[in-house]
Image 1 (spheres, rainbow over the protein chains, first blue to last red):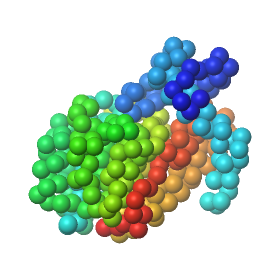
Image 2 (image 1 turned 30 degrees about the vertical axis):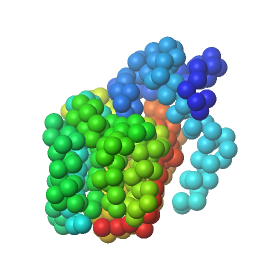
Image 3 (image 1 turned 135 degrees about the vertical axis):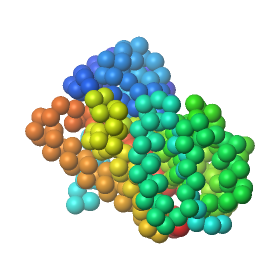
Amino acid sequence: MEKDEEISEDIKELVIARLGIMPSNYKLSIGTEGTFTKKELIEHVIANDKTGRQIAKMQLHFIKALTTGKFIDTLNKNE
Amino acid sequence: MNNSILVTRPKYDDGTEYLSAYALEVIKKAQEKFSVKDFEGKEAIKENVEKYLKNKNPKLLFLNGHGNESEIFGHKDKIIFSLTNINLLKDKITYARACFSANFLGHEAVKNNSGCFIGYIYPFSFWMDEERSATPLKDKVAGMFLNPSNEVVFSLLKGESARKADEKSKKMMIENMREILAMERKNEPGATGMLQILWDNYEGQIVLGNEDASL
């Protein structure tokens, strides 16, 4: 979902689960979108709004880096 | 052109308060060797920045704040740079700690000149610990994200190239990712979420134009 498209239900569940394990005292600053508590982030993902889609994109970038091996390669080549 | 440095540090929300606090660390170091013009808070507006650029012609700009693909903002999201005045960045080294600035505006800044633009193709994001929000520099969570970005300018201040500055910043991000992975192995809460965001900053930070540019 590189384009600003809707978050599928499967991805929404995954993103919410990952946000759910963040400590409650942590907040995420996402530039002009603002700064959000865990609860607010989850609400945006559920609402499928611009901020929610941005959060999903960020998580999917990382999952892609994990599944393609790019993340591990990056860590290894810099040892 | 002289070796003076222009910094913008708007601060009117949580995000810009943190960026401003960490940018101040860079300013303190820069002042040991350079003349630094610090446009802080409500002083971070287009009129002030343009006037200084025209009169003093600084070599390095360190822009902190919000942004998008075609604009970089100052105080309360007022535009400082857009396509209408991007020519003012010609032949300069610009580091824009602002979301999406390297997607379009950065390319325009370095078109047909010897300047360099370091910025982000994704949002520049960071986790912060609300319990430390009154003292951002003591917030170890935010430091994982903001110290590597400060490293870009620390490296430039040493006379290193833009390419080297980017490399050193990313090396610090990787060191922090390893530290976060170690936290994850100890089941410390929040490690995975931190890793995801730091990876996004790592992938999103790019150098445009003359990568050999230096102070």
